[in-house]
Amino acid sequence: MAAAARPPAPPAPRRRRRLAELDLEARLDKATYRRRLAAAQERLARLSRSPAFRDRAVAVVFEGQDAAGKGGVIRRLTEPLDPRYYRVVRVAGPSDEERARPWLWRFWRALPGHGRLAVFDRSWYGRVLVERVEGLADEPAWQRAYEEINDFEAQLLESRISVVKLWLAIDADEQLRRFRDRQAKPHKRHKITDEDWRNRQRWAAYEAAVEDMLARTSTRGAPWEVVPANDKRYARVRVLEHLAARLEAALELNDPS
Image (cartoon, rainbow, N blue to C red):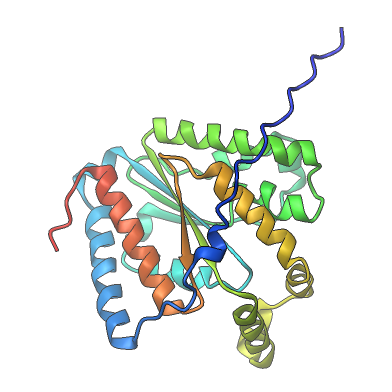
C-alpha cells in the first residue's frame, strides 16, 4: 500500500519585516560599554553558579549575517563562565554519518545536561536559511522544518532546557566594510572566504528566509531576539543583558541591581 501523502505545510504568517524595523545605528561609547559589559558578565557568572541552575540547562543559539560579530559576542559571554559547565558548538556542514540519520539527530547529541550551558555558533536553523537559499534542501524539506524545529524546541522546554535565540543583524554596507577589513589584515584574512562573497550576492534571498524564520519559529517559550549589530559594543552588551534576563526569569530570580 502506498504511503499516505504528507499534508502541505501551512502558509507562512504575514511577515512584520522585523529586520527593516531595527535601529541599526544604536551605539555605545567605550565607557558605557565597559561598565555595562562588566555588570552583565557578573550577572551571568552569578546566575550560572546559582543552586537553582543545577536543575536547568540553557541552549543559546546564535545566527546572523556573515561578519555580524557572533564570535566576539560568544567570547564575552563565555569569559565569566566556569569552563567545566559550558560548551561552544560550532556548526558546519553535516558529516556523512550525520547525513545518514534524521537531520536533527546531530543537534540532539550536542544538547547540554542540567547545570550546563551550550552555545551554538550556527544551529538547526541552517535548514531554513543556508540549506533553503543554496538549494541544499528541497522545498518540502525546509517547509516541513519549521514545524519540526518548533516541536524540537518544545521538547527542550519540557525538559527544562531554556532556548535563547539571537539573530545578529548588520546592514549590507557594514558587512562590506568588515569583509574588506578582513581582507586587508593578515591576521584576519582567514575569516573571509569566496563563499562569504558569494553569499553576499544572495542578500535579498537570505533576508526573505530570515523574515520567514522569525515569523514561523518565534514562539512564546523560545522567542527570537533580533539584535542590531552594526556597533559591536552595543551588540555584545545587548546579548549578555538579554541572556541574563532570560536566565533570571527561568530561575525565578530577581535582579537586585
